[in-house]
Amino acid sequence: MEIELPHVGFFFSPAASAGAAADPALGDLPVWKLQDLYPSATSTAFVADMEKAGKAAIAFEEKWKGKLADAAAKTGTEGIGAALKEYEALDDIMGRLGSFAGLTYFSDTTNPANGKLYGDVQAKITEFSGHLLFFALELNRIDDAVIDACIANDPDAGHYRPWLIDLRKDKPYQLDDRLEQLFLEKSMTSASAFNRLFDETMAELRYEIDGEKVPLEVALNMLQEKDPEVRRKAAMALAETFKANIRVFTLITNTLAKDKDISDRWRGFEDIADSRHLANRVEREVVDALAAAVREAYPRLSHRYYRMKAKWLGMEQMNFWDRNAPLPETSGAVISWSEAKDTVLSAYGNFAPEMADIARRFFDEQWIDAPVRPGKAPGAFAHPTVPSAHPYVLVNYMGKPRDVMTLAHELGHGVHQVLAGAQGALMCQTPLTLAETASVFGEMLTFRALLEKTADRRERKAMLAQKVEDMINTVVRQIAFYEFERKLHTARKAGELTADDIGELWLSVQSESLGPAINISEGYETYWAYIPHFIHSPFYVYAYAFGDCLVNSLYAVYQKAEKGFQEKYFELLKAGGTKHHSELLKPFGLDATDPSFWSQGLSMIEGLIDELEALDKG
Image: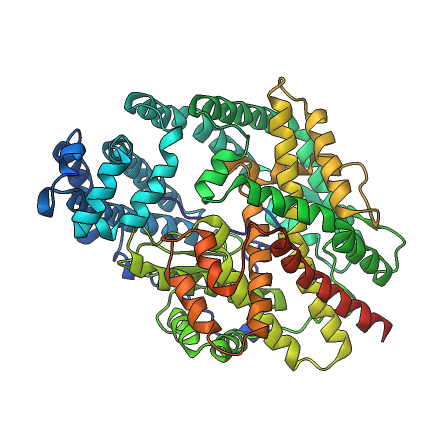
């Protein structure tokens, strides 16, 4: 079980520099209480659960392997339902162990003991999982009619009907047991090995700016400084270091693209992104429609906005390092933690008191880690842990308006995870395409609440501009990333790509998406090298655009709804992974297969740009 860091890889919540001194104006910042999972890694409870999980995995394999076809005709303790209960209990305990190790590690990644704990626990969980690999494969070899009868006749199996039905979607692409075991074990010396090479290489790189060598997060953060010379120097330092190491990144990219091509061919996937679509439980046609709608909207969204921004910054054309520069109107005031808390809870409460009540627990029960400190993971994330525990949220809070939005976003994830937890360990996880629903919706509620309280024209302009940029980064930029990946993986089928080949593909999609208001000059051709999603999760990126557009459409329905929206919204969140996106969106009158669905979502971004333009003229 891995902890997902949803915002690493694009400019959403940039990390502060390591060791930055806390501003007294922030107030007391909370640190999460991991003792809710285990007292410590040496505690009796942790050691006992690790031993229990290992023995239980072996016992599960001995008890059920080769016997599931017979179990499908039985009920009670000998039926499929009983096996699923045991499997789910194992999933929960391994998830709890992995969550504790991961959250401990992300609390301070520079502590060698934390790194060893995380690595050792991940290795053990992988070992345990090897004993469970047979379960899903064997279930999918049973005839569908037999499983349907089992679901109908065994109440315990019937409870897991959504999971069993969903499992069938993997059936056409699964291999025999020995090949699946080989793929699992070889992954540690193929894809996993090159993922680790990327991570360790990137972690060691430093970028020299004015004689000081800084890590990636600090250099990227400088691209949002007000001083244009600081932004330029940071951009050139990034380009120089990427170029000096481009051979390594080119090798990693070529190897992983080929590795994926081999896997896809063996499994029988037709399109280069079909494996990701399957994992996301979304149809290729739906993603194609999303990507086409966003590409068609480039001139109305990013091209138009960046043209306006260039004028505000006093430029005919912005440099690529000016894309995320703050506007002159951007406030430098520090927002205290208590004010941020009140802002988010008030916005949530105005929508639905139950939503604020759940979010308040994160503050009251120490489920949030907020301070910036040396070694702490950068950015922000919400980790669900397991249903038998509770989620945790990590932010790096520095009192900026964007930090408040990040807090609202991650608490949205947290509320979603709490509500979906009732589905149990096997069915609480929401596909990536829907996982951003509550987070983006919570962010939108908070943004609208703040905007309504802002009467000053300059402050309002700065807030609107920041929101538009976040949405462009989430929708336009991520679809451009997706198009880059499609071009790269397609080209790789014909042979190995040089760094120049990859750079040309990168520049082609960046130029198209950013538009003529941004000068893409020398140096930017290597900026593909640092995006971790391309390495860890090919084609992951479109899920961000999917989620943002979905919420924009959902929010438009909310604005027009007279009553009943909140109840339907909570039912959507509580469903977790038990329903397809079409079933979840139907109560709202939305259909992701309808091309107009995406147009409606994109029109909200366009509407915010209209507001900005009106403010500018006024």
